[in-house]
Length: 67
Image (cartoon, rainbow, N blue to C red; front, side):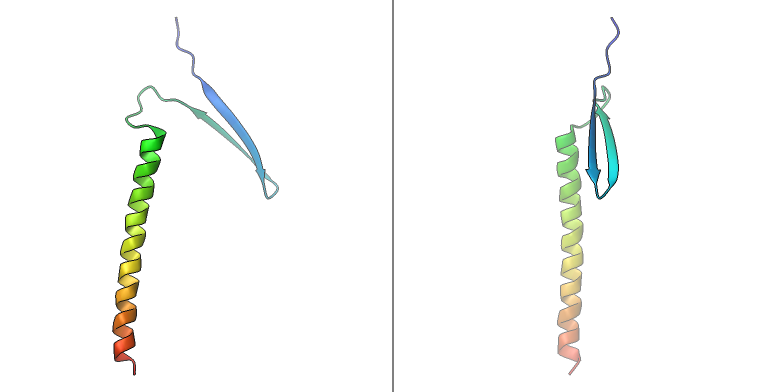
């Protein structure tokens, strides 16, 4: 028996544009959607933290030298 590809289609209207999203499960996936999103959010948060830290250092240096 042949395995059926189960897919879901979702349609929404945002600002006059209709978006159609079709999703399906991959048999060869190495991680779940939850794990992937968690990894991407964590990586992005670390990146934003680095940007925030570097901008705070620049502000501290500028505030002491620009009198």
